[in-house]
Length: 249
Image 1 (tube, rainbow, N blue to C red):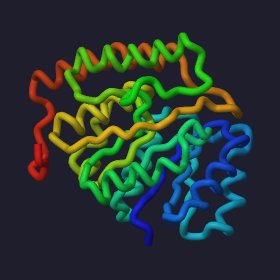
Image 2: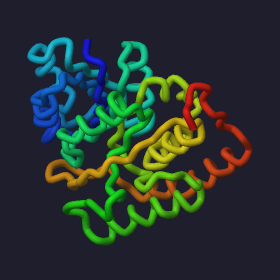
Image 3: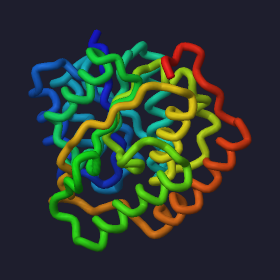
Image 4: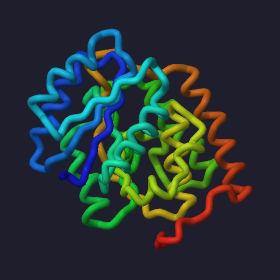
């Protein structure tokens, strides 16, 4: 059995899903993939279903009854991965905004260098974003600056969604107590990981905006992130997050 699982949540990704699956499986390292589809009306799950026999025991599909949010999809996937015994669990988008070649860098940071969380960072070396309008680049960049200012977290790209966790991080976090579902989910998971004392490394990547399909970003998701970080900071001040006994921090 492979030691690594890539979780890919999907909603209306018929233009991308087969290509991203084949691209990942073309890599030298034998990753496994779990697609979690929120009842896409465009047939995304059906495309994955047809690929299951070709990639038997490497590709898995779980379907949910509706669009339940990015955070709940990942929580579902984390629990699934832990139950199946994977050591390294990845978050990745279906739309090629994350380069599959960078999976190896994230894996090596955890499996070889010993980090507990590796983050594919757009902002560790300047601003590495392609095809975004300037307004969105500035919004994302300064959102991360705002998060760092409020939380004091030592992470440059606080809303990044391209990550590799060592399973011990997910075992230490009470996944049933994660509160947020959109961008704030990404911030919350990083913040708790940091507060628990796990070792985090940011790895520079180039983020390329999707060329197919439709972005799921909304004003509601952004508002949740802005308000959510204040809640996280207050919980941190109140000592809600205790350091993991096995951490080296």
